[in-house]
Length: 163
Image (cartoon, rainbow, N blue to C red; front, side, top):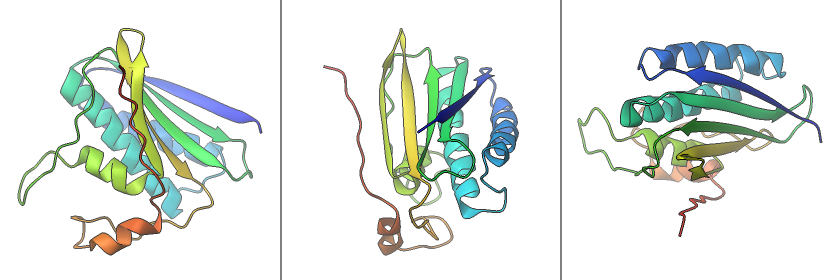
């Protein structure tokens, strides 16, 4: 299978998250994923969360990569965000009215797989969405969804911790 990889350098400014979303939308459309597809919205949310985490929690520039099969092919879309911080990601559990701490919970709920690994002096956080899998209609904590909805898409969770 032929894989197309596109990437964007993101500066260490929270305003860059919006630029990353706009860039990603145009690349998804170019890959054959229509802007109005639920898959596109899921991928944009995942991209937004991973880029936000990199920019806010590290204060470092990052590189966003999106890898997917050529237009018209089924398969997996992989999103990667690499940054210069060697600090591992930490999944937090937001409570009630907390305004932060839901990013990796969303990634865990929406992606089929996700994880991280060291890359150079920093790390790469990645997630994958299978294009042919049914999409979740709701995420716990968002629009009042229940935990039962989470299993509709979730297949595995793989975090690679270096020894």
